[in-house]
Length: 155
Image: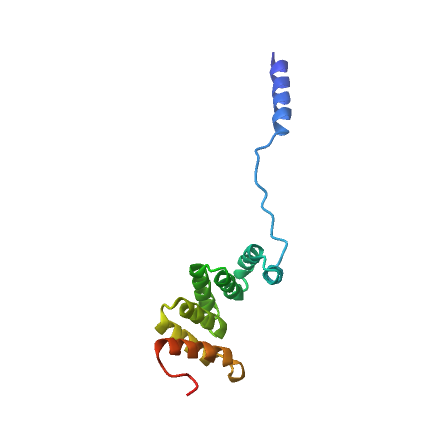
C-alpha cells in the first residue's frame, strides 16, 4: 500500500513538474534611446508618422527634444491639442531652446487664439536665439504682433 502511494506521488510529481504556470517574458528593448530617435527621424522623413510617433515616444524619456518633434508631427497632422501638449513638455524640459517656444507661438497664431501668450512665447524665442539665427523667430513675433495690431519687433 505504501509502495502504491509512493509510486503515485512520484508519478504525480513527474507529471506536474513538466507543466508550469504560463508567464509573460518581458525583454529589454534592444534599441538605445538614440537609435529610437534616429529611427523616428527616418520615419518622419518618409512621412510614416505612426512609426515616427512610436519611436519618438520611446526616445523621449532620455532625449527631451523628442517632445519637440512629436509636437511638430501632431501639428502637421492637425492634432493641435497633442501638439500643444508636447511643445509645453519640450519647453519645460528644454527651457533654453527657442524652437519649442516659437512653434507653440506659431500654433496659437495659426489657430488665432492665446495671441498674448503667443507674443510672450515668440519674444522668449527671440531672446534665447543667437542673433545670427533669430530671423525665423523674429518673423513669428512680427506676424503675431501684426495679428494683435502692434508694431514690428524690428522697429
